[in-house]
Length: 202
Image 1 (spheres, rainbow, N blue to C red):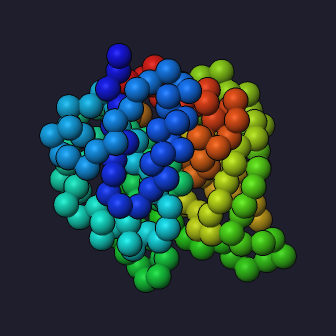
Image 2 (cartoon, rainbow, N blue to C red):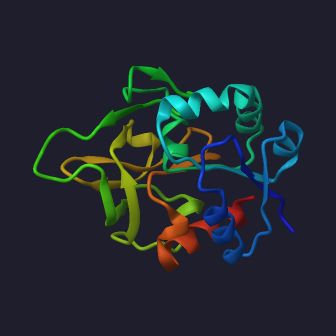
């Protein structure tokens, strides 16, 4: 059985991610212990709340996460967990992220659209990558967020349109550090397939 660790750093929807992974055929552990994290076959970085709070809570684990990313093993950030993978965020005040993927987190511009974006939206798959194996272009997934990721085409796995086009899913140049702005654990059969793909990558 593959050992997947959901990182517990005080800000995350741990239980629903755990349930989603169990449905996808894994038996995940929840841990904030560096040794357990580094011993895992794959890790998930969940997150809800503010970027600046997440980065404060992640201080003790920054080195561990960087080391895991360097190992080449798969890592998935979900929602705020995707955003903290990036270089910086303008939420609250300009705050450095984990900088595992080049890019910035920006607030949706003022428009007639409601912020946060909340609910189902469809994604465009931009790259052939194991995380999106068997996911049709235009699939609907579930979002809740006020800030979006701005990154290069090579770091964009899937995009979404909400007043502007942004990265709904990101990846590093090695292909092992990934993020989804949407919640796969709340995105029905499509989300479960993405989680299953992640488990298979581990």
